[in-house]
Image (cartoon, rainbow, N blue to C red; front, side):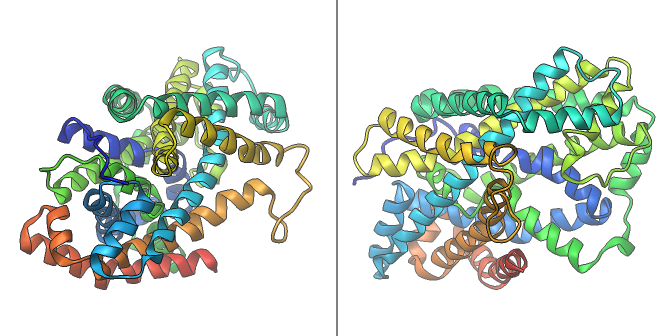
Length: 446
């Protein structure tokens, strides 16, 4: 297949697109509860450090492969491997990436559907006046209702695939240009509200006051894994976005802007969430239930809390929407590379993802007693193995291919950072990022 003719219309469009891909559940759901479980400021400091040493170099590796190949991930890897005189089996990395994002999208759509449910419940004020036990029971009742879960899963998937079907410029770019500024506006509004709460000072001190005593091996490993996960690297999804990158744009500068925007979302979300949590004297280390149980309890007790909670879940919905589009795009691009039209490819992806996602939906009801690999439900399995194992494997292979296999001249052109920038990037990937990815992978397996 020849090079793709589609391109982002501008440098800004590319940065917003990649930021939209990176910002999602990792920033607004996973970062707050991971921070809460891992000592606040200690985790935050390590997370930022590993974004610089691990996340950014591997992200650049993934995008530059797409930019140099100008094809779908599988075809780009085939083309570049031949160019380097390497084995054509590198193409299977593209297929592995497609399988990974397929599995992630199947549960991502289900979890994102929860934000639709909570947005509606918040607007209707249904959490006001409920006790903590009643809110927890309401969440469990929702999970156990396959009809409501299926409706939200289906609706979110339709929202995602309708954008992907429209193409790069008419779909992905237009949505990102509208939603990303709106997302930051909502975040700033929530953070501004957080400043007025009684818990803001305690939350800021907990997040930003250095606390070396809280650092442990587990905190380091968790920060390392989250820095890798939050930038959406390792699944060849950003490779597809790199194929549409403008011809003359410095990749390090663009990725640095993405990192700043991505970390900013996490920090603002943390400030907004923990200010409310501390205002109510609640425990910040509530784990994954922090968003769907703890926050409704905390907001329900505050003046106008129902509307602020609705804004929060609208924010979550927008963030997961842009991320899910990034997950769907490489799957659709791969089918296009096989000769299918974008519309038909999108429809096939939608049906397949919906069907596998239904196994996650039913994991809380009809299939709750069906276990995999021991005591894991299908939802547990699909939320653990692809993110903790497949992503690091993909990231490791992507980094090796870009830093050790691709011809130097090809990488220099795709990186567009000059000879010195190339040397810094190559040394960082080879001797810092790759060993760190190995540690993330071993930790995930362990």
